[in-house]
Image (cartoon, rainbow over all chains, first blue to last red; front, side, top):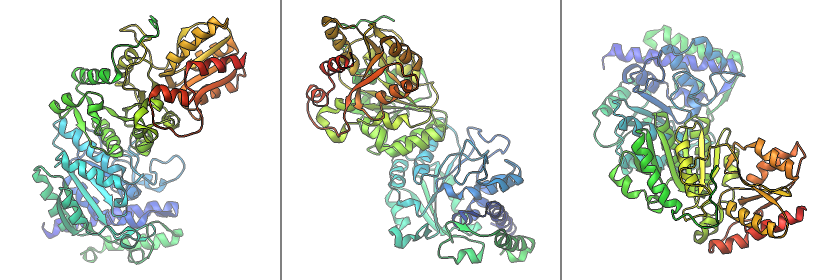
Length: 282
Length: 316
């Protein structure tokens, strides 16, 4: 990837983060840590990998994204707003009464959200069903599946992995957001997941571990998944929870953060300044 | 409706009906897809599925995953039919049914075989007395407690294009024949099987046969009892329930389920405001199941014609 392309993707990731903070600022609290950790991934996915049409969000042969860690909704909403699925102003309604943007992803409420998630683990099986269905229908699309590292405590994740491998769902790309923290603390302390890459390999996936906050690494790894074959793909994303806002990155507990408008504003302005100063991005 | 009940079993076992109808529906409709959790051999679908691997999907022993996969297939444009034993089709995978299918708007049909005492020799671990109670809490779900082979065929055909989550509880063995071959049993319509003025027996599933036997015994004692088949537990045919309860003033609800949360609860909820009848139940008390032959279990848990007779007489 050339430098200009990389910078474009980094700028879009910054915009995603800014839009996510717009939502948290409006509501005063939210799942900021796990939303910011996947912003780079969403930038690369939507800008370089996914064939989609914001004017036809339910087109059957579109590429699909299942964010099984449904609490990263605000990062998805920000991305979708930037892509034109709905007006940017809607971001201010996160979790307000009657909103189309609930904490957790809801396919029936938000244009562009491909699957409802929130009860952790369930998105993995849903994505398998979608990938299987697309394959049987002869569609050429891929299904991207974001799984949280804490979420991988759920047994259903591994049931789904066995299924994906047994049914040779090579149109499924699992993206494990290994941001090292879950609600109650470090994943290694809560329920040590051991070696994710070794686990996915053992479950029959084509697996690689990359810097999940690096656009070029994300692009290269995702490009590889276009080759098909007879294995599903798992990319372990080594990420930082709260990535992009240093103060949030350094919090011991940043799964959900509550702050006053002024504080959110300071964090958001920091990101806006980076966006305006292109040299600051790289 | 042509009722042919004479107390004799239909020669077709439910499992054989499932084994024939599921492939037949798949042949008619390219969007029918069938999933099972390692229990294909129990309903005679395995040979067909082995030959049609894109239409019959064995998910292995992973019911939660199976429901999620089915919901994902629904999102891809399919009409999934899922089978496992009743306890796993309900409590084992309930959060997946609730969210991945129900809440997410992915329409699926779930078949839970061997409800209640039909689990017989698989025993208490496999004996769902609570499956209806769970599914009743699922907004807009359809719950069907099957009486005979003909009804099963009719219901399966209706479910495939019916929106929402459909839960079919049905045994695997033979059951008493009630409906003439080819008779359609429209979902949502209670079916009066027998008229009577002293009491009405509302029954579902295997308890319909017991209710018919009870009504005959009561008649020999000079008591006239109506029997209404409420195979659609949700949405309940409130109008028919009210009409029969009001006419007789006494109702006994007979179900192969815990008395909490099932048909008895549904009927009581429908009647409470109107205050038109005294209501009693023939259902499982608030306890767990156990192992044994089905006839023993029906006596053990109070699910026989004799129990219905006693309850009806108790209301007179």
